[in-house]
Amino acid sequence: MSRQSGILVQNAQQVVLVCNNGEKYLTRKAMQDLAVLHDASLVIGRNGLIEAVGTVDAIQSQYQDTVFDRVIDASGMCVLPGLVDAHTHPVWVGDRVHEFAMKLAGASYMEIHNAGGGIHFTVEHTRKASEEELFECLKKRLQRMIRAGSTLVECKSGYGLNLETETKMLRVIDRARRELDIDISSTYCGGHSIPKGKTVEETVHDITNTQLPKLKQLMLKGEVHIDNIDVFCEKGVFDLESTSTILQAGKEMGLHINFHGDELHPMKAGELGAKLKALAISHLEEVSDDGINDMAIAKSSAVLLPTTAYILRLKSPRARDMLEAGVIVALGSDFNPNAYCFSMPMIMHMACVNMKMSMSEALAAATINAAYSLGRSQTHGSLEVGKRGDLIIINSPRWEHLIYQFGAHQELIQCVIVRGKVAYENKNCLGYY
Ligand SMILES: N=CN[C@@H](CCC(=O)O)C(=O)O
Ligand SMILES: [Zn+2]
Image 1 (cartoon, rainbow, N blue to C red):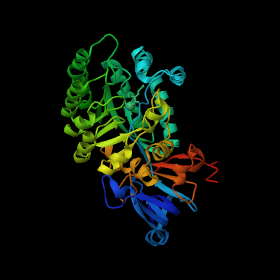
Image 2: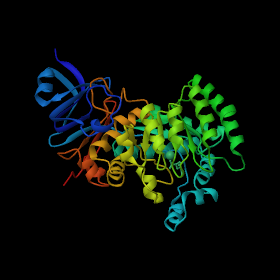
Image 3: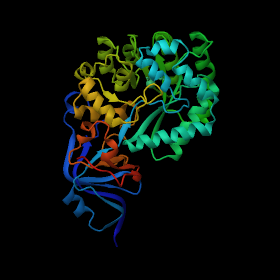
Image 4: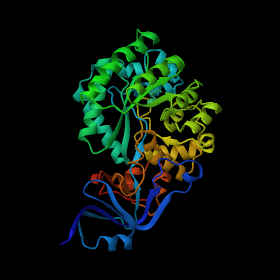
């Protein structure tokens, strides 16, 4: 009797495993030297996990008696792990296209923020929105991310700044995690800004004495799921001490520390994150040399966000210094109303051009290292047997086209598979020409 299995992706020109020895992250030279199979096939079992990956011949003989639910011919194409977006703010209403115009005319991010715009503008609108309305927005945005190849996305709250709206946002993220064909890492970011009319002290007190204890109860009851805690550590927002207080309170609840630091001003966020054993620190445009060294030793990953420097016309983070020091470098889109970008292929391209990363480094940063930054690299971020069946098939004979062709992912990404299920298929994909 014949065996049965899930999906066979066969005859691919290249299957980019990224790594194949159970590595939890890649640094330095290992990021240059990704594991790639040529003329290869891959099998995802009905349990949604990768069952086998190898040369076309090897898979053919191993599975000759197997009937698959679906066979995908990837002749002339490349298979890559699903992309991991390590930093997004996707739950909000009220776009800020008017602020984009202000920034183009010369206003800085903090000028707009201090004048009551920026995060405050989004908070005002998000507080008024219904849970259903927020879910519909999030759903559309996540679908756009899937179409751009992301299969695991970090999603932050942070446009509530009070218990009611932060909880509403986290419930919306949790619903997306349960209902949509995409994996989510959920981040409580109640420390995203100081709410209007409050002091830093009052805000820290509210977060540590009201919001976090209540969220802990909801987590225990299974009403909400949170993975990470985040704070915007920045001059005029949360200083080092208040950041540390909030992050430690979150860590005591079992959350991973994953915060915004050293973005617009040097704050010694790299040093603080390393001391607190943060899993991830984002931005780091202004990180110090000591911060870089401490992060390398502590294995606190650097989540670099090329859109920030691009949109705000700032200097880019020192990716090369971090890579040379052995920091675990990851990438994120930073999708938010200030930086409206869903596309990790574009992020990788920008990381290569503006931050001087190689294409291999950028792919490692957008897969295995981004998964590490979310504590998920045991299950995500590479195409290895036993890991999640999350992959993308691109219509080009070399995987690098996904990065090289700036803004062309919609003509390259033929298929996105999440947990062994086809989450997106582009039958009209024109290909790499
Ligand atoms: N810097 C803080 N947070 C976001 C921006 C959020 C917003 O402006 O709405 C970021 O990562 O870029
Ligand atoms: Zn952010």
